[in-house]
Amino acid sequence: MWAAVLLGATAALAAMRQRLPEHAPPPAARPLVVDGLSIYAIDEGAATSGRTVVLLHGTPGSIDDWGALRAALTHRHRVVTPERAGMGWSESPVSRAEHALGPHAKRAFQALSQLGVRDPVIVGHSYGGAVALQLAADHPTFPAAVVHLCGVGPDLIGSAPWRRHALLVRAGFILEVPAVGHAMSDWIIPAFLGVVDPALWMRGQFAGDWDDVPAAYIDRHVRALQMPRQLRNARREAARLPADLDALAPRLSSIEAPVVVVSCEDDNMVPVAAGDALATVLPRATRVVLPRAGHNVHVVRPDDVAHIVEHAISLADATDSD
Figure 1 (tube, one colour):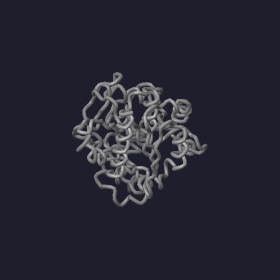
Figure 2: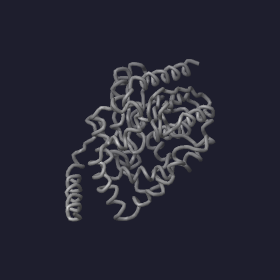
Figure 3: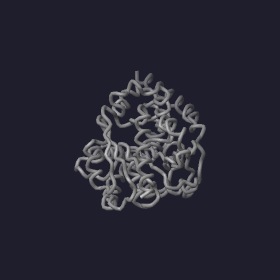
Figure 4: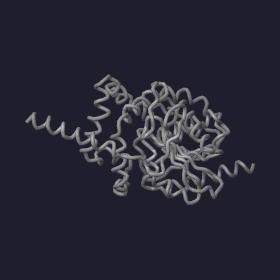
C-alpha cells in the first residue's frame, strides 16, 4: 500500500514538474525592469475617455486575475495591469523586507511612470487595495481616484481578517525552512492543488456566483498558484501586513484623491464592516456595497465593477474641473 502511495506521489510530482513550465503569461504581457527586477505588465486599450485605469491584483495573484474586467474596460480606456514582484511571472525580491506594502507601492509607481501613466484611476483588489492606499498616501497627487475593491485596509474594527488568520500565517513558517519549504511551495502544494477539486477551496471566494465562474479562469488560476514561489511570497506579504497597515493608518487622512470603497455582501475575506470603518477616515470616500457578491466579484461580474470604475472616473473628472 505505502509503495503504491509513494509511487503515485512520485508520478504526480514528476508530472507537475513537466507541466509547470508550460504555463505562460498572457500574450499581451511584457516584462519591465523595475528596481532591478523583471516585472510583467499589460498595457492595452485606447484612452478615448482621457483616463488610464490601473488594476492591482491581490495575493496570491497575478495579471491573469483581471481578464474579464480588462475586456469590459479596454473599449473605452487605456488599461494598465502591473504584476507585483514575486507573484505570477514576475521576479522575486531577494530581501523579505521588499515584500512590504511600501516597496510594492514604490515599484507600482515606478512601473507606471515608465509607461507614461499620469493621473490614473487605480483599482486595487484585496491586498492590491492596500497597495493602492499606500501608493495614494506616498504620492498624493498621482492617482486621480482609487477604487478600493474588497480591499484590505488598516484594522479599524478590531477583528480584521488578517488578524483572524494570524494562525495560518504563523503555520506558514514551514515555507521558510530551507529545503523543506522549497519542496512544499514548489512541488508538494502545487501537486496537491493539481488533483484536488478547486471548488473545495475556491468556492468561498465567489459566494453564490460560483456556477458562473468560467472554467478557463479556474484552470489558469490553479496553474498560476502551482508556479514556484507564489505561496511562499504570499506568506511573506501576509506576515508583514498587520504592521504595514498599522503604519499606514495615520496617513489615510492625507489621501487627496476620491476613494470609492467597495464591499461585497457575501465576502468571506473582508467584511462589510471593515469597508464602513475605512470610509469614515478617508477624506473623500464614496461607499458602495454589492449585494449577494463574493470576494472575487470582478471575475464574475465585470460589468458591475466596470460601472463602479466609470463612477470613479466621473469623480476624478469632477475634481479636475473644481
